[in-house]
Length: 216
Picture 1 (cartoon, rainbow, N blue to C red):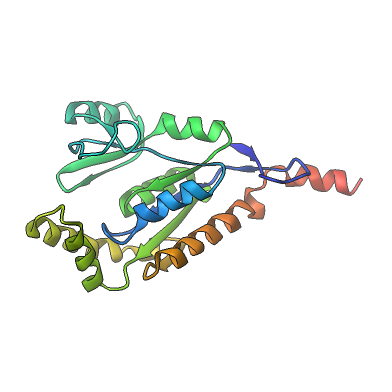
Picture 2: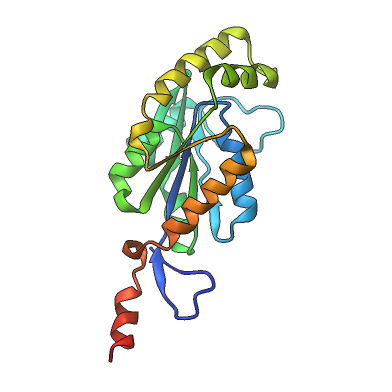
């Protein structure tokens, strides 16, 4: 979907960016996603549907679309998801209609999804997908961050650490990788990637028309 390039005086347009952030739980992708949304004009979050229970402070439709298992299965059967995955006994998926509506309104779309979702999204949207994987400084530091949250039992943290090792093994399926040992530095790196991807020649659909006008 073509969208105006912010600040461009020549009326050039480009296809919207589907910008994926992935990381193990506790490595900081949600924090960086919030920072990016607050700082970047024309970027909107894709809100996933999930079967997991709502946590204190969460809002339906803002943090997730909370649905029961029967409704989730119906959405899968009727092809209403761009991607979906089974994580820790719960299901998560990206509603197709929401993303299409954001692109139609001229927005870029930010995804906070795992490697399975990133892979499925890339298979569907190809070159419009930009995949960024965020590493923790070390697995020991990751465990400390999870323990400091004080929201999970030791058993759940052990399960998250096991899943983290699996997620890290899929790093080579991403376009960019960053280490989050300093959240501000990592955020600046993510912003730089987004800015460069927005300006890619292959994404600028109005460029050919501009060149023709330029060379008349």
